[in-house]
Image (cartoon, rainbow, N blue to C red; front, top):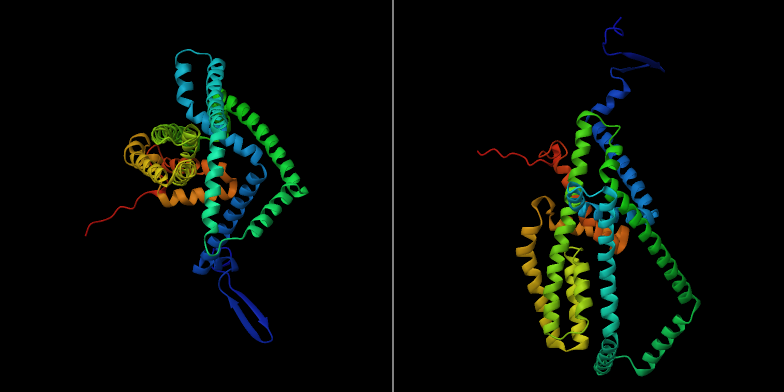
Length: 383
């Protein structure tokens, strides 16, 4: 009768005259310390396997995922403009077309500005770079370990053989394929951006249809927070990048460094990669000044870049970037590394805003101003 009263079941096993008793069912073994550890280990393995599968799928479908993510970020950046135009009575289709044309014109203008400036000053820069390279070779040949003229000729012949080889031709074909993929991704991004601008809220409501009650409210908070964080990040970073590029442009023009305009545009673009972008842009500007001008000018360019970055970090970012989007430098570096490994330069650009959006979602997980339970700061009790 003990079996029906919920009492522990006792099992007697006789084998070669030995009685074995098991006072606990086998499943109860998962309730001890080692069983809990094993359960957690299996859960971690399952989560890692799912995450690895998602990352693998994203890597295989970068032609789709990257344009969609870029379109989402751009749509979040222009969400206030769309809300303002709708509030003024502008039809949704007309407002979408106006916003889309503005984005396309801005991106096209940046690209045209770079091409125009480089083409306009390329001949002078090429001649100055050739003189600088010749001076560098002459200086290097005076060193005790400098390569001989025979070695230089051999390296040049190797380079010529590579350019005329089939391997270089296959690389050129790969370049053509990359251009075709870029055009395809650009068209997909524009089309996706059109629908995000026009029907973004309706698309999110459609995805939330299976949820009810608190789960639906959480989904609404996640959508609103994601749009707010991504939009604020893009607008704030673009403003800071614009001020940086103008400041460095003024410095380069005063120092008479060639390619000042394309270098300023490059500073604007690289500003979307935190920490690394500013350093890389300053290095490129200093190298151009070193080749085209002299060593003193290069040092002055470094000073201008450092000054502009200090003004940005101590004045502009605290005003333009909200506290919700601030991430620790260690988190930024980890996000940049992961993004670069998974998506190259585009991954490095997208890593930080996506990380900021994820952190923003965590901050509203249990309520409008209530973070997830594990992310809440612990209350300290004074002795």
